[in-house]
Amino acid sequence: MSTATVRSVSERLSAAGTANALELRGVTKRFGALAALTDVTITVKPGERRAVLGSNGAGKTTLFNCVTGDFLPTSGTIRLFGEDVTNFPAHERIRRGLRRTYQISLLFTGLTVFDNVYLACRGVSRGRFSMLRPRKGDTLVQSAYELIEAVHLSDIAQIKVSELSYGQQRQLEIALALAGAPRFVLFDEPAAGLSPKERAELVEILTNLPSHIGYIIIEHDMDVALRVAETVSMMHNGRIFKEGLPSEIESDPEVQELYLGGGHG
Ligand SMILES: Nc1ncnc2c1ncn2[C@@H]1O[C@H](COP(=O)(O)OP(=O)(O)OP(=O)(O)O)[C@@H](O)[C@H]1O
Image (cartoon, rainbow, N blue to C red; front, side, top):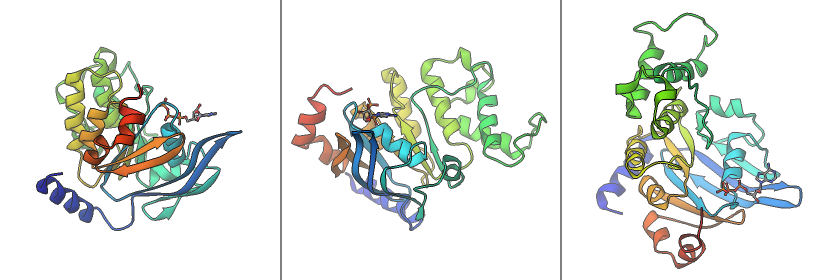
């Protein structure tokens, strides 16, 4: 890692607060006899960008589902910005600044890019049941346009989602996840199905997110993951077996054997 990168990372971390963004301690999740997660302990600092990598069935999605509250862990604790949220429902975690994207699309394809983002902004703000049309000067309108710009879709803000390319739809999904000023985002395979050009754009979008927003990215594309993450956790069979900097992970023989050479994905 270069000196410039190290400096910008530490500056960002100190600007983002003191409590850890996310802390998992001894998290186990069983489905009947199957342990999808076993004794998972992870600490992510505020503003930190972490990749969680591992082969199919390693437990990555289950990890996300435990963090969001879609699943309750069988044992262990989960803290979000210092608060124990282990038994909190998903909406309480969203209120505390947690967001996620999904592998499946949740877009309204008959609406425009702007309408999708505006509705997401309304959905996480007060007065969301108002039937009034958005007005110029409305702060939510401004927020929606800022998010659209952040994901490089300004030129097509008034285009219907059904007319967007697959890559543009994935970019829009990132904008939806960013609605309502999140502090921590879980990105679930955002590069899946993207062309090389779209992947490069994704890398740019993620690396240019506001500095206080930390995230975990699950990604099968090692190249994307290692470029957008500052730290990496490797999973196998429901356990974290290695953590390190992208450069350390990339050159680690055990990782190479289990993941890079093992026909993952
Ligand atoms: N709801 C569920 N009920 C039963 N078993 C489940 C459930 N969800 C996940 N599993 C099992 O838990 C294990 C971990 O699955 P998980 O989806 O978390 O892995 P993953 O690392 O996300 O894999 P992939 O990269 O293929 O998405 C797998 O053996 C899977 O079959």
